[in-house]
Image 1 (tube, rainbow, N blue to C red):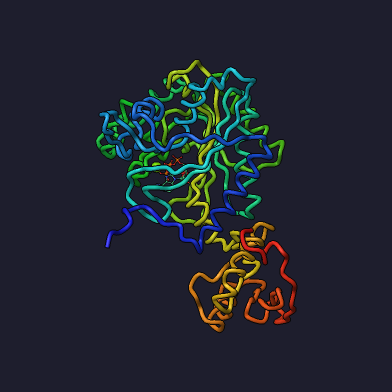
Image 2: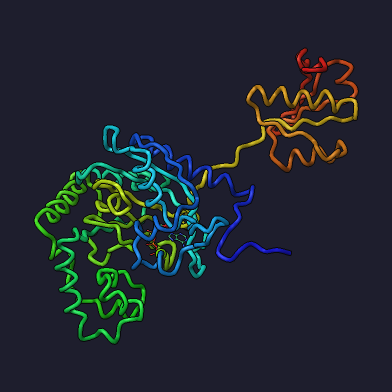
Length: 416
Ligand code: ATP
Ligand code: MG
């Protein structure tokens, strides 16, 4: 017996309707913001993520599925959705179209992590990317998309946390202040943070180690080090959210795990799914496009973990849609009837109905039992009598009432 790889999951036929429901919901919200879908490959050249995600991140350092293909190219399975979209934006000259370019994606994401509840090695993300606008209203719009999705799904207890981590200019000052603050406790930091200390001190704020968290309790806040432009941008985002009556908290601890962020960063955090509470994380990344080889271009977006979203919805006992019911189960009662019944099934499918046909050669009794079990709304029976009369018996499974109906000529004639 070969088992499923660790940290991956099957979506079984009995559960797939939940995925369809979520996908339908996120797509309809995205479309209401006039955002169009983009699909990019599941793998990219490793170089893209080294440049785009950054070599001081956990993703690049520890989590990527990287291999050499048969042509000896280094290939990496998508560890996040944004870098590929930025590549496609540049490669297909989407910047030359009237801006902004607003895109969404639904994609598998691969990260070599320690599997836990809400933490998989293959998970799925719904993501939004806005390219070309530097307006704080673009930041707000992408947050609004996430919020509208939660609202549409009926989620109540989810908190929007926002912060600004400034631009490379103001971050220089902040990094110095943070290093000065941590200097005396350098030896007490975890190995990863000691490594970050010189390479990218801001990332220390994102450490999940309890001891590091404690050492950071009174750390200086990035917000106090913002330059004038970054400060104004942050203020405009807050005011815009206030104006719409959208609740949020300013949380100076939020810095996000990827190097490409500038200015706004945000997370939607639920207290309903245990330790992995961040269902959606995003922000602005004005330097990403340039970093992966394009001309400078402002951008903002988010990634939403679909599995975490589903855990949260299930824990909240929120409805995840319905399985599509079977309209008619077609029950042939003899070998002669089977041919006509099979044509009838095909005819009805062409009329837009969902039709189940007996492929197991069940007995009459077993067919009726099975039709009941799968919840068919109607059963159409074709036996010897019906064949003679060129009709079928339609049984309403809810009321138990039956009536005989003439078969249309398309079904009676062979070759149709
Ligand atoms: P975390 O801090 O929990 O590791 P992250 O900052 O690495 O999250 P992002 O890169 O921002 O996560 O990904 C966006 C979203 O994708 C997360 O908010 C989360 O909902 C989901 N996600 C990230 N990693 C995983 C994973 N390994 N398994 C399931 N969902 C994940
Ligand atoms: Mg992570």
